[in-house]
Each structure stands twice: as structure tokens, then as C-alpha cells.
Length: 164
Image (cartoon, rainbow, N blue to C red; front, side, top):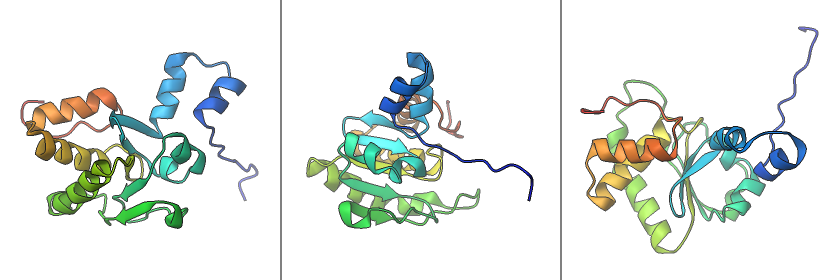
């Protein structure tokens, strides 16, 4: 229809190192689009990460918390999955999902599982859920929890938290 067809190719971190001349920072940025480890065994990421079996296996993911209204449907049988259909719009009250999210993450980590919390791009809903988890689990103030997650995943959105 438009004369050109484009194909999106997704590469693992190892494939980026082997096939492209990218420096460490460039590879870090590209792989950060997938997911970032916030604490040992707790990751925030995108649908790309949740849809990539190789990435999931490389990071020993056992539990996936999908906080999007359009979760990927791959690999449902291979992981402990929880879907919380949170819409990505300004009037969504994400706080109503904090308890269910906390319970899933808490029990997964208690079982020594590795958890991926993801939304579409891994920059808003999933980050908010993990910030709320950290606040509750570590008794951390919202500003400190936000800055901690932002330090681990710089691509998260700036959030309207007092003092940030």
C-alpha cells in the first residue's frame, strides 16, 4: 500500500553484542527498553520482555505480572501469570490494584521466584506498581521509592510525586 514494508526485528543482548558494533552504553539503553532489574529477582519491563522466551529464560523469570489491558498471550503454561487489566489513561485509579499486585510480587519473591512486572512500554503502570510494592515492603517514602526505581530504570516517566 505504501510501497515499503518494514520488519521489526528484536535482538537479545547477546545478539546485539555479537552482531552489531555497539558500545556498552548503547547496548544498555537498548536492553533497558526490554526490562530493568530493580532489586535482585524483580524486574520492570515492557511487553517485548514478556513476549521474548529467550529473555525470560536468560533472567530465570518464573512469575509474570501483566498490568496492561492487552497482555501478551504467549507462554501462559510456562510461568505463574497474573493479569491485572489496567488501562493506560489519566483517570485510571491504579491504587485499587496495589494490594493484588503486592500479594503476587511478595509471594513470588518469597518462593525464590524471579518476577517480571510489565505494561506496554515499561515506563508507567509497571513502574508505579513496583514503586508501590517497594513503599509497602520496605517502608520507603514515595519520593525515595520513585527515585530508587528511576535510578534502575531511567526511562520511566516522571511522576507527579511531591518533592521529586
